[in-house]
Image 1 (cartoon, rainbow, N blue to C red):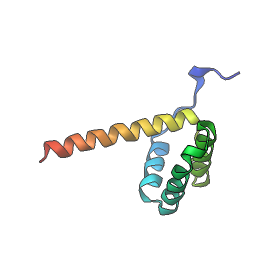
Image 2: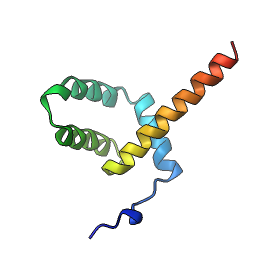
Image 3: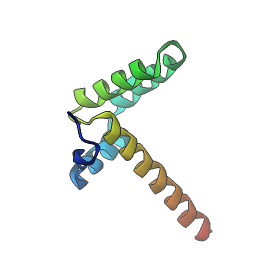
Length: 89
């Protein structure tokens, strides 16, 4: 039985690797773009499964809840950087 409070925590290294791969891995970005084009033809479950597989193939083994957290962190970081950029103008 999986207990919700026993989820594996993300390490700083995992979060950094996730962001590094998204920012620098051209092959991964191309595959993510191809997957995004299939979005309307896939169920959400199938899409997420393929998304997790792409990350796994690039050395980042995460589960669905960890993916959600990483994407949220990335989104919030982008927002903070945009706010900082606006205040420097």
